[in-house]
Length: 117
Image (spheres, rainbow, N blue to C red):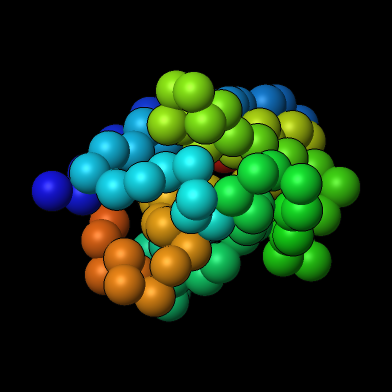
C-alpha cells in the first residue's frame, strides 16, 4: 500500500535551516510528481512546493520562494525540502503528497517544524 514517511523536522531559530525528507513506497515514484504541504495550528493545509517526476520543473508558493528548494532522488524514492532562512510563520506540520489525482488522499504522519523568534 502507499506509504509516505516524512522526517527531518525539529526546533530551529529564525534564520536557521532544516532539510525535510519524504520516503515513498507503494506506487511508482519515478513517474509521479510530488508536492510538499504544510498545516499550521488552526489553519488550513496549504501547498508549499511541487516537483515534476523527473525533477526538471519545480514550483513554489510565494511565501517560500527563494528560501525553500524541493528536490528528489528517484533511485531512493525520496523527495526533499531544503528550508533556509526560516521564519516563525513557517512553523507547521509538513507533509508530502503524490501529484497524481488517484493518490491525493494518501498522507503520512507529517513532520513538525517549529521556528522560534
